[in-house]
Image (cartoon, rainbow over all chains, first blue to last red; front, top):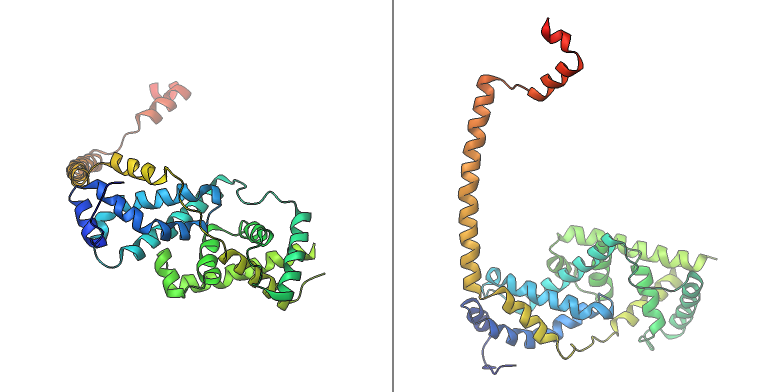
Length: 196
Length: 101
């Protein structure tokens, strides 16, 4: 990577990029890649994280003229990353792929029982368990791309509704309604799984 | 057997906390270079902006000409009436006698 002045602000770097110094964009990449990977990794399967993060940065570059150095570049980039993830799921659903879980119903039911037992004992203590993630991935795969996006932001990441609305570019009312419905749908999926 | 509400909420909380604990993988060795190579392919911002502006100007000029042509055609059709030659030909072929008499 080429050397650059680390005291330059994001706005100054953007100004240089817009003036034609394309290589300076790499500074923004280095500064913000952890943030973008954090957003993307919690939303898309691990195998596609790099691709979606790549897409988010390319989108940021092509829309840079619209940013024009106003506000916080990190927050603006976060919006782009969240929307890139949303578009990723819309495309997956459109193609009707089976992206997340290849577990059988019986395996899922046993995972649900196992996860429930653990949650009864002390939820959160061993939260890094692989089976819990597989189960959640399976359940979320049954939701629409919109429900998935809002559930992740409002219920899993516990962001305020207003922030979620800004990130998705939706109205606050829309986010509130979707957040309520998506959680209800998720609970119905989990209930049904255990009832079978 | 259906779970009660509390059990489902506990399960959901457990699943969410498991998801939150997921750590983002670091980018692979060639990732940054691959993003930059795509970005360089787009070209410098000013060049691209100039190219887009030129295309946009051309498209708008062309749109105006298209609009004017469409209006002239509409005026012509309105004053002369619309003749569907295809339908006349089809009717003639279906029943030529009607057209001769």
